[in-house]
Length: 483
Ligand code: GLN
Image 1 (cartoon, helix red, strand yellow):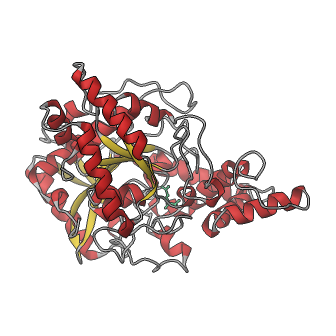
Image 2: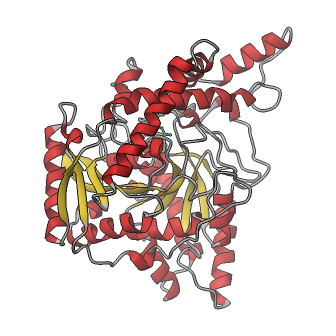
Image 3: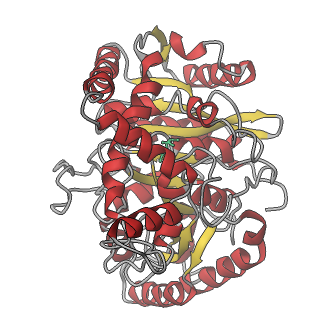
């Protein structure tokens, strides 16, 4: 039962082959048995899951239908869940029970999903390896000595290990697409404003976006359908109608113009990944796509710009965790300053403290123009590059990451080495564009992802291309040994 995709589960439930309660029990038992190897969950919500499953079965018995009715999922532990710990992977929020549900959580619950638990993540979503969590590192089911990617590493490892069919995740600079690539999943970062950020604990507000992690494009379409839509509670949510994503999956790729940026194939890219990217291009050409070389000339400035803007926003967003308004409070403070210093010093881990310091520095009087303002100007140039490219092509294709998943601990002493791994993903966040990563092969037994980028609100086009690719390849069906 645990091998089923969301689409297969929906069919099985509709055909009364099993109930949501039965499926939920199977998956909870599987999590109890296998998750100790992976550490992909921070909290399990067995009681909630079983009551939601029973309610979904009752709704189906009453004649209701729906692709998500009775579907088991999990939420990355930065989506607020009412009455349930929402830790953001941090000691700071270890005992925080959210007083309300995030819009994404509420929408998916209304659609009938069953919440199995809250997944592990890098602390405050800062990282590309899921090693900065207060609850310990997550392991990659493809090789337990390697990282699963981050920051949504818990959601990715759990779905890849078939502990559940799909999970929510968020992407500020790649945290849906990069763990998808590292664990052989399909992950979609929607257009900025497509999915509500209300109740999603902020890292960098102008970059953060929630989206689905699943095994297939078809399942990403189903989960995104339940997540997307205008939310008056989020001032950056965009009031655009949500198309039927599943309906667009089967469109023909005849004549589709795919742009491949020449800057993507620089020295930093593992040549074995470059070869897999070229193979995926050939596959799409067979399906009727037309390939064109394009240029994104400002790409080389994106990492420094991102690693100014994201920490700047983080330093501001995280000021609320001070031991008074929110978060961990130290024991026996001597005075107010001592309370702030020790509460924040004890509550935040090293990477979060580093980002707060970088961000506060970049925003400080005298340095603002040199760093933050400059970074915002680069951001505009990055966006302009994409706008020019999308005048010529319908989709941009390239690697999701320059290397496959590295060994646990390999980059711990060198944060910049880890930042450089985000080179292909962060530009979509800077520009607010939708991006998808899909499985495209293996290097040394570790999965490799190909990234597709599309113009604003063209999530349907990304899902269409990925689905057609998946109908003609079998990379996405490979399962890690032991799971
Ligand atoms: N690796 C990037 C960072 O650490 C992106 C993380 C994310 O998308 N949440 O900022």
